[in-house]
Length: 207
Ligand SMILES: [Fe+2]
Ligand SMILES: [Fe+2]
Figure 1 (cartoon, rainbow, N blue to C red):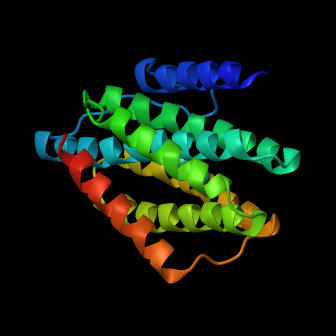
Figure 2 (figure 1 turned 135 degrees about the horizontal axis):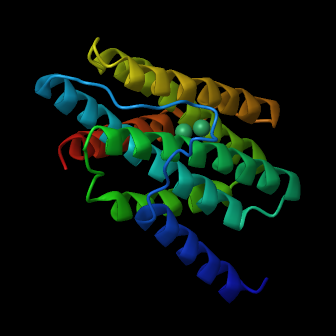
């Protein structure tokens, strides 16, 4: 593909990710159904799922951004594979939000573009750093999930179950990055990633 083809392909992918809400099909492995929650619990679950949905949008952009600039075909293939699993998470979060009558963050296009740029910057680095970036991202995602699973109201077992399923994949992604030869990122980079994610999570929990 030419550079222009790559760019057009990425724009199409981004629009598809942001606009076409993918839902879990009945043939998929997770059986989802609606449930009755009181209004406070429902609102709390919507907040939690809106943040997680936004996180999965960012994951798509981070992996796509890294993959587009990565020349190593093995790493590229691995990035697209992980991205496919992240897409599954996005479908799960979209489905749960829809079941709860919640809406997604209005800033998702902005988060997508910034995460894509961040992914490109990471992807232009040496292999050990780009994998280090993935490993650190997944580590922070795992910590985030531990925190957010505890924020889900006790009555909402369905949301908890979904987040636990997602967490299993994220643990595997973290391990995979380590196996592909990652190096621990410098502390200032780790802190920047943590502050950036805290900011966008705060905003997304409201709008
Ligand atoms: Fe994910
Ligand atoms: Fe992941």
